[in-house]
Image 1 (cartoon, rainbow, N blue to C red):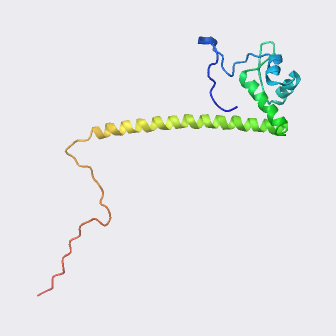
Image 2: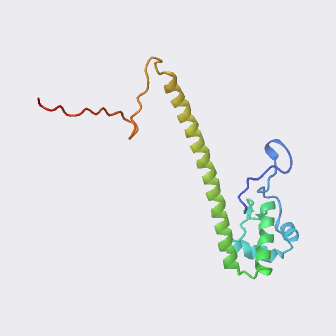
Image 3: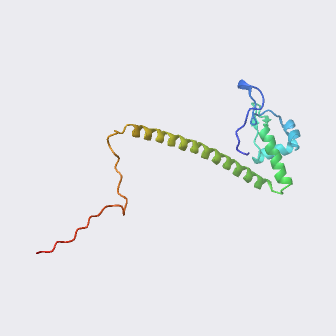
Length: 154
């Protein structure tokens, strides 16, 4: 929910477990979150917490799902927010996380483009002939003006 990338928690190689790895059955998830299994089913039906499913349609919760369940419970019990409000909060937090990720991607792309531009500019400058002087337009007020009085007819 906070938009951070998950770091491997256990194991190496292809069997690494992350915060998003669905490993907990509903009874274990209920114990870990301090909620009743029926509450977890209700939250799933409402779309508040959507665990992964096995081939047999059984729910499998991840560590991130457990944390989200705890957050939903805290918002509901401690803050008095109704489930529709909690769903909207979760949607907005997910949207913010996605936008932050997109901004990071675009910043990386801009940095890459700026580096490429500087490299190309350096190539162009390196190709200049040394006997040529670059033209610089005159700065207003710095031009030399020669004044000559009008000649009077004799």
